[in-house]
Image 1 (cartoon, rainbow over the protein chains, first blue to last red):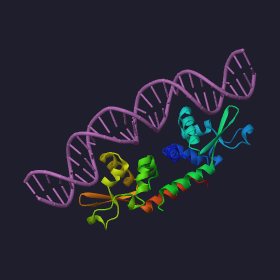
Image 2: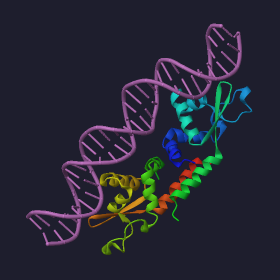
Image 3: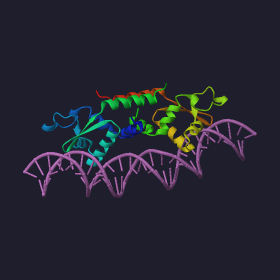
Image 4: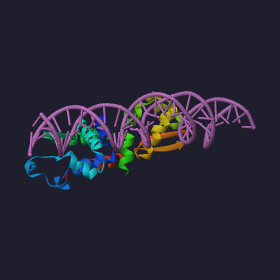
Length: 102
Length: 102
DNA sequence: TCCATAAATCGAAATATCTCGATATATGTA
DNA sequence: TACATATATCGAGATATTTCGATTTATGGA
């Protein structure tokens, strides 16, 4: 739980929106039939919604991953990203703890 | 509650530490007798702990103030900064809300 | 093997943040 | 009024972030 890295990762509106989109798989186009049983969303789908270049989105996902907010799973040529709910809650708790008074 | 501005303000370890220090007045030197009944800490005391230049600390306090994390109160030549607990809790709630799943 | 596709990495330009010292402003005091 | 003190603001250099297109790497299929 590196709060520095986590806050940095969140310090960007598109990265925060990506995290929100990933709450619900139906924010993205349907998965290919061969991917239907996999959790997560591929970079191309995220890129399409973010309307940023492939390299930028790949970089963003790397930052979110390093911060622990998402998990990446490779399947063939695709990388599927999904939220890490445990780490997200841990971050919220850490922020609360650091900011709250006693 | 501008979450963008708030996260930006927190995206710096010294600013986060200042917010922590301000939880407890005894983290700073005792107030002057004429200031004993005032809440908050003057910039010079914060600067001393932060070990950064006066202009940097003044700038930091301005950012924390714009984000709503602190309140500034002028008394004579001094500006006393103190935490805005309500806004801090509102920020925590907003982060929780934005990051948490359903 | 050769090509197509998905994603990651590289290098660079534009922009933003950090941090300082110098200066300006406001106030209090002699 | 003149000066001292506290803070804010300005301007600038150093560093970091954003974002891109080009390239590289990994995989899958013909």
